[in-house]
Length: 133
Image 1: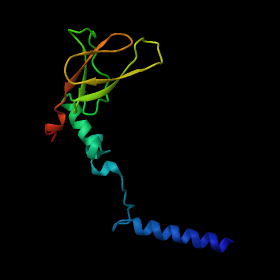
Image 2 (image 1 turned 180 degrees about the vertical axis):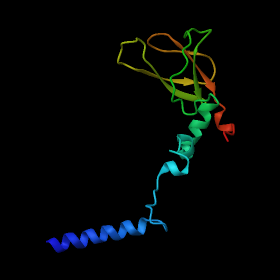
Image 3 (image 1 turned 60 degrees about the vertical axis):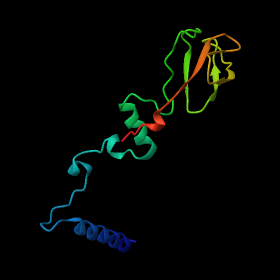
Image 4 (image 1 turned 90 degrees about the vertical axis):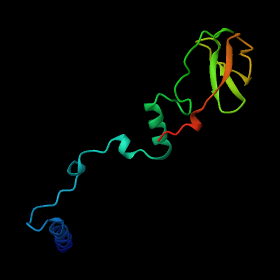
């Protein structure tokens, strides 16, 4: 049993010696030696990077943020962005209500929610044509 422990300790000592630099000092590998911890900007790629770049320009590519509230009248309807000519919309008519009223919103005139009467209008979005980079 003791011989196993000594053999194990010898292997650890050999690893420690290999990790030492030419002057015998231990080589320290850390993120701090390369300029610190990388930021989110340095690490983001793909879809996450596109969303971050768009957010800097004030764009909400995938409607992640809640829509800006409008009065919901025919003159000032709630704007719903879409890349097509129709979209399904869910209206929570009362603040403490757990029921969602779903209806199709088509391009053109403002439409009313069948339950509460709030107006919604389909608006075009042009984010897919803009270059983010």
